[in-house]
Length: 307
Ligand code: ZN
Image 1 (spheres, rainbow, N blue to C red):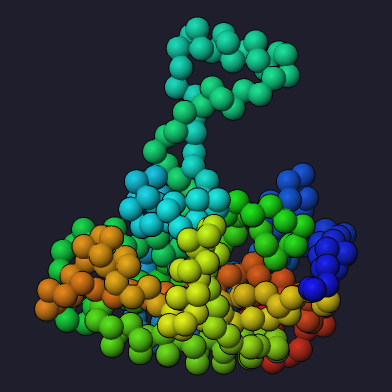
Image 2: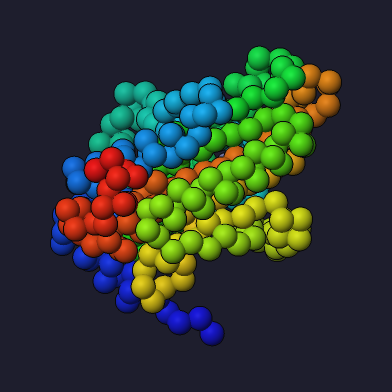
């Protein structure tokens, strides 16, 4: 049986709060960030960007939302119904407003007065990219390479500070032939390891699976592992707890190519892959391994980050 890591999560979270690096918002998995924390996030993000710059990716930045339809079309709702969040809003009449005011005055639940807006919160940074690439028509011979950075939401309330509900992902996304996609992933497996090792963090890369939902999901997860479609770069963050996935390397095969009808130059369905860096998780790992005072971090790590 796995040891319960709860006390360790709580202890690390309390340490981060007492040092003022994270700011409590009264909801598990939602935190404010201090200036120091954000400074590390920005330096780290720049270092990740620099690792990918030689490939001259196209830069795309999106708000933290995508169309609910886009989320559905990408298969996320089907495979992970428990994780995404959608945005709802009030769109009623004066009469509905009066009824809402009564509920508020009585301290009753008012959220039922809200209706879907057609906007969903982005679950992973790369989800905004596929429809954009699809809308441009057939790919050029070299395929597409996109650098994306987005706030993401997953409904996973937890006291583990490394499992936030709202966090940022810096991703590089490759769209093209199966060969282009697999060499991209091999390149980034090496690059990400070198980058994280240069930050003085202990690294392991292992085959992994996405948290597919329910009984049908177990089969999908087993399949994903069997075909080595997902790898994770793991770093121990909470001392007694399990290691945390800080970077993931995903080969989606033709899943998004089919969903969005993305065609290669030769007219075949495109394959896609992404490498996603969890910037908050890596930042937390840095504080865990090098201490809460930046001035005391090893010189080599400060150099890599430009601190
Ligand atoms: Zn992705």
